[in-house]
Image (cartoon, rainbow, N blue to C red; front, side, top):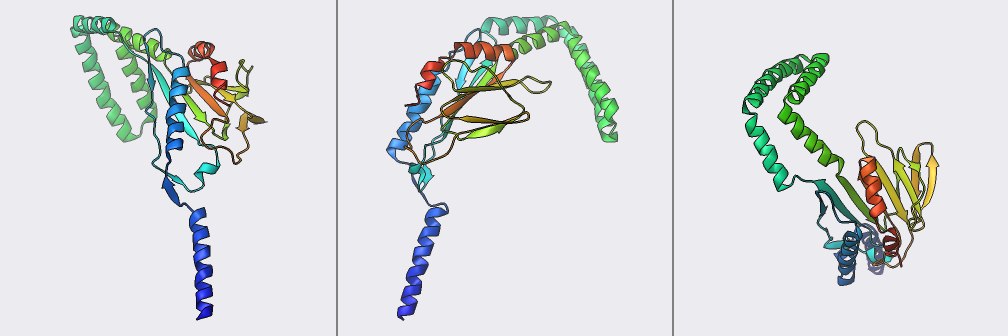
Length: 267
């Protein structure tokens, strides 16, 4: 009987250890919740306001209701995203509507062309004729651009898109492998800066690091990390900001950022 009691006690201790180490959860406490909310507000307030018809749109904050046991032993990691998207003004929308209404005949002709080309595209897709599909795709694009009102609309949309960008702040994030990136001159206030240049299908991205991040380059890959260790949970210890968009737009945006105030979040 004593042996059974002893074995049962050992089993309970082992189960408790495994449970604590394997995903036990608890409700988030008020201090942790306050850290999420305060840090979110500070980051959004410090990001530059939108200009020239570009709307600043912060992504809604998501706070976990439950966290793992031991969560309080390490810095809280959180992510804050904000997009800057171009939008037509009321005047531009009215002018675009008037332009399309005026060109009803041309738009109808273009629509007929596109319907005919779409039917051919479907046949080419069913036959697996890739060269024909590419040829038809080019013809469809030419049909759209051949219509003056649609060409103007597309140009207007392209101009707005060129002014758009997205920003993400990774608070207390340990880091990541970035590829392909290169180290660039670090703006005052940040501790490290890297950039991915724009390519055919990928926009430019600049990443600014604040805090004791170390950079280990491997050919074109930048491994940028900070050592994860126990520390005050509800405090900003380090973070990085990613700015993605057209190169000129990103450069102008970063020039307007208050990097000194952002760096002051680390206390």
